[in-house]
Length: 132
Image (cartoon, rainbow, N blue to C red; front, side, top):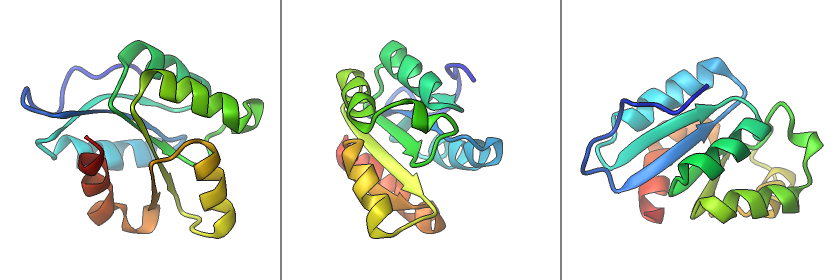
């Protein structure tokens, strides 16, 4: 994936990088974010390595990332947290798993917010806008 040139508006107050290993989820969540006037979707990443690279390049306000990325085991949580928060102000983690273990892993990544993917259509954009 690459940076996006469309979506959001000039008045968007919150820039977002979206990261998920699923093409379907990237399309669905990307569409949801592009419909929100206060959010500018800067790009989409399909792996954790790509997320780290694009975060450094694009410097989004918020990185919205799936808890379980395809290459997550190649990086330690502290490294992920330090690299993401070096260039982004906030991390929002999404997952279909909403148990204590998932929330603990999200916290180890430095997540400002944890979103259950089953409710993201009503909870994701407010959570992002709350951070900006």
